[in-house]
Structures are given as structure tokens and as C-alpha cells.
Image: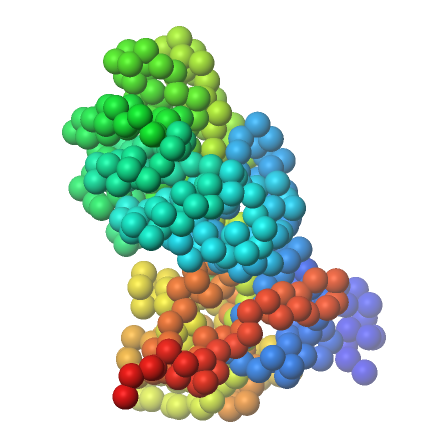
Length: 445
Ligand SMILES: *Cc1c(COP(=O)(O)O)cnc(C)c1O
């Protein structure tokens, strides 16, 4: 008999996680110390699908889609599929009424295989290949966001009456990691607003008879927390709509403000102020348009991470525990091949023991991967029970965005399966990769 059985008021506090905001909202703590997500125990998932495994809570993704649609009922919400794309995810997005961004012929193929309507697809990319453009024209994608003058010519030669937007760099610093800051001057995306390159791109698109300019686009970066940064970008973009109207006599009907909304990864991290964003973006666009006598454009936003990050959990088994001179290393059976973000951006994660309870006090450890690089770290200086040992199950939350999609085969390790959970049932979405899969591509001897 546990203490919670004797004192019923303790039960609820045992059910609840100490940091619920970084776990899927269906996550529960069981009396045996395991976690359940979507009604399925993590130990059961690890037993059935092995480790590492990406677990994704369908309910959380759908709830996130609904929160956006509720906050912004008059705004088109396009899911940036590069964050996490499988056919099932495309299906959920479609059912929730979202549009879809793709960045390559491969992402487009996933969307088409899921039966997603091509007219609701937006194609992005700073360097779209001829194959990307041809596949998009074959599929009949609704919009292409042109990113270079070369592309204007290349797409012009392939297209007929293709709706396009021009990708603009509005010179707004999203105060984020430089690897994901895409709105500042002097980087590879889009046409600079300040230099006049964006206005020139508009001229070139309008001069291309097979392209139909429908609007402007910007995306200032990822993990952007400050609503004021989005607001500044929106104001500047309306300024460009005004210039286009003055020069060409046309009021462009669409303004796409990109994504990049911040997501908390650790307890205490700042979350995104969605209702504040909704109010201030619409207010800024309407104010700027009305004072300039412009009709308000239809707005599109493109959240990726903020729709899927919290829905994902990665399960690992502890392979070994090593006590260094200053640190304890807990090495697991995955690492930078399934989670590249710590190595790419210095991202930090929480970790929790799953599958069993421990009475041992917490001690700080560094959770590392199995790969042959010292930078293969999953979580630095995180507390885990001091009796952590080989065979234990670990759960890493907030791994729904840019994990499966950024996975590699480094050290010829097969990429993990993706398992969706909902209403007490798991469903395999993507099977794990085997050595046979990896060898199948090695065709020369
Ligand atoms: C990546 C990307 C997004 C989504 O970014 P998140 O940080 O995942 O929200 C939106 N729009 C464009 C053009 C992108 O490249």
C-alpha cells in the first residue's frame, strides 16, 4: 500500500506531472512510476516497438491545430510540414482544416500520397531544384513562394498561370539562434526589403506572363518569442504592399507572415502568447492598411514547431552509466542521429525516468548518445534518480518537431519508428529502419 492509497488527497498530486507544460496534455503518471500518453504506457510502447522510438500524441497535435484556428478564425493556418511529416500527420492536418507548406519534391510526395488537396499546398525553398519545381507544377500546387530571380525565370518557363508570392526579408531580428534567424538582412532567404531587391522581384514576377503574383511572404525565424518582432515585420510588409500598389496599381490580396512561434522545451521556458499575437498582428495589419487606404489582405501564418513539438516524446533505453571525474554520463541507445538539435543549435532538453518508480534522490547527470562524437549529448546536467542503471527507460519530451524530420543514419544506425497514440491505442506510422534498409541503397561493389 502506498502513501497515496492511505491519503486520497495525495493521489491527484501523484497523477500530475511536475512540469505538465512540456509533455503532451494526455500524459499521466501511474502509481508504478510509469507514464501514460494517449492512454498508453510508455513501458508498453518500448516493449512493443523497441527503443529508440518516437511517440506522438495525435490528440495534442489536433488540439494545437484547433487552438490556432480558434485564436485566428479569419486567418489561413498553413502547417510547415518540414517540422514533422508523415502521411498520417498530413491527414490530421487536412481534417483540422489547415493548409500545408512543403519545401521539396519529397515533402510534396508525402502530401500527395496522403491525398492532400494540391491547391492548398504552398511550396517554399531558397534553392528549389528543377525537380522540385517540375513536381510542384505536375501536382498543381496552389502557391509557390519565389525566393530568387533565377527561380522566377525557371518557374516561369514551366508554369501556366501559377499563383506565386514573393519571399521578402523584412530586416527584423527575431532574437533567436543565428542558425534559424531568417528575417535579418544578409542571409540566404528571400529578397531584401531595404535594398529594393523585393520591389525588383515583384517587377520581374509581374513581367513573367505565366506567373500570377498573389501576395508577399516573410518568415523571420524559428523559436521567436516576441510578438513585437512579428508585429514589426507585418508593418513593414504592409509598407511594401503599399509600394506595389503605388508602382503597379495593384492591391495584392495575400500576406503570409510565416511561422516560428516559440515553444517551451524546459520547465519555466517562455510559451507563445497566441492570443496576444492574434490581436496585435491583426491590429497592426488593419491599422497600417487603413491609414494607407489599402484593402486588408488575407493573412496566412505558417506554424510548424508550435503545432507538433509538444506532441512528441522520444523513448530510450539506458545502455550504461559511467562515472567520470566530475560528471555522471548516462548513455542511451540513440542520440544525435534521432535528435540533432543539441548539436545544431545547443538545444536543451528535459529527461525523465519512465517505466518504474525510484525512491532514490535525484542527482545531476549528462545524458549522452551512442554516436562517435563528444558533442552527441541529449541533455546536460539534468536530474535523474541516483539509482539509474542500464536497462532503464528514459523519456525525453518535446521531441515532436525537427526530430524525425532531421534524423540521420550516422554510424549506420537505423532511424527510429514513429508510433502515434490515441484513446489507449498505439498505431505504427513509420517503421524503424533496419540494416537491410540501409544496405538496400548500397548498390556498388
Ligand atoms: C520552417 C518554416 C516555417 C515554420 O517554422 P517553425 O519554427 O517550425 O514554426 C514557416 N514558414 C517557413 C517559410 C519556413 O521555412
